[in-house]
Amino acid sequence: MTTDPLEQLLWDLDESMEAEGYLPLYTFSWWLRGQKRGLSEEQIAALCQEAYDNVTRRFSVHLEWFDWPVTDLAAGRRAEEGTPLDFDINTRGEIDTPFLALVPDEVTRS
Image (tube, rainbow, N blue to C red; front, side):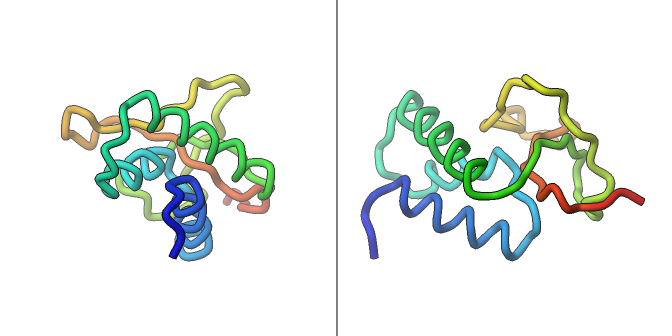
């Protein structure tokens, strides 16, 4: 097993995309924090951005806003170009805040 946090994060994100069909951005930082590697917030932010750039190069995806809970990918709302990335969500412990997720381009709307 690799010990590089970026490689491990990318492996996990790929697995999540395959299993769930989308990637909430908050999972990037949650995963890194959950590894308890002693990373600083700056390191976590940099790794999240690097992982995002990697995923968006390898997959045909776009950003969408979702409300809790996600029960249907068709319920997402496409984010505007230039929307600031938010890898930290729910810092208040409430679930009333929409969150950003990467969604495959081929997801169709009803």
